Image (tube, rainbow, N blue to C red; front, side, top):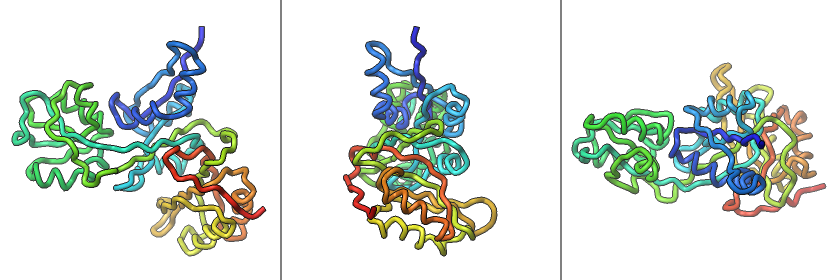
Length: 301
């Protein structure tokens, strides 16, 4: 009897993260290789740390968690976890996000007094909420689906949730309004995180993620660090400064570059870090999401 392969994700059921998991190429591959009826198990967890802990304990092979949003930037819980954990990123999914306002049957828009959702969703929908529900109190939740589930438990209480439209059907809610996001085309990037191991095989569309630390913890050496990559024609696609928590002005830098860690241009840049007064912790090399533009790594040998 085959043991079911389990994937963790930020739950509960009906989150954008679950939708991203279903699009993950590795998840689809497991379903195909397992044969008919062998779709991997999806296990929802109440928070990003809980989902990643399930991987650390060996309960799940991979966790899918949100990393950043095109409107509100990095997801703090994920950034904090990646800064400290020994896990590796093994894949990514970029998912357009659209929001709906939903409430139990019998709740009209003018009766809404509280709006539950994930902080990122509340921020993205702030302009709409201010215009249409100026007196409603925003209540943070661990996820958009957790907000919908909580509101479903409060019939007649004047509560509504901002969540993905499918969550309304899943939790028996009525959609009061759609298209709440302040910007059309908003996208959230999700990453698949697995136990540290040798990265997936090199392709023509790879991304390498790093946590870079400079000797003084400040930004002065960052230009030299990034120059190690750009001087070798390696595109730097993302840089985020993240506090170390040690003192004011001390940061780690999350850096994404285009190319696999085994590519000579990428590995050459990494070997030059000590000379630039910096070091890096490898977070993973993995195929870029298909929607990302192809940027072949030329690089000097």
